[in-house]
Image (cartoon, rainbow, N blue to C red; front, side, top):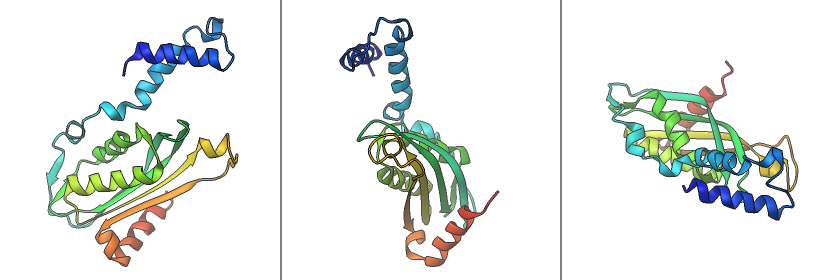
Length: 187
């Protein structure tokens, strides 16, 4: 990302919406916004192989592995407004397990881009399955969307649930129900 160009575009945007980019409170805003967007869209410059970093380990485990309540922060591609919430990932290992922190890094890899929640959920599930060789994967995401909360229909208490189930999570009702039961447990 060209930070200087983005800063200039933000300065032009401030002028277009009727602001004075030279007033005290806005003097450094273009640079701050450019830096914020660099971070919020850093998924475009990440490399999945570097993120996984060979943290796929041989294991005799063939049980369900669940990591829940992974924080998600993204920008909707329609309005470039934030959406945020939690992601729950489960998979049934087949001779290999992923390092647990890699699950959260996979979430960040895809969420730090302009997104829609439906695609984000599917991308995470597919990557966990591909990288771990799991027999099945389930991903459930629950997010609140600022484009629904602060503009448009203005429904502050709304949230959106999406799920993607692959392999045995798709073909076996019992496996899917076990996953849903595990992620529904209170702390």
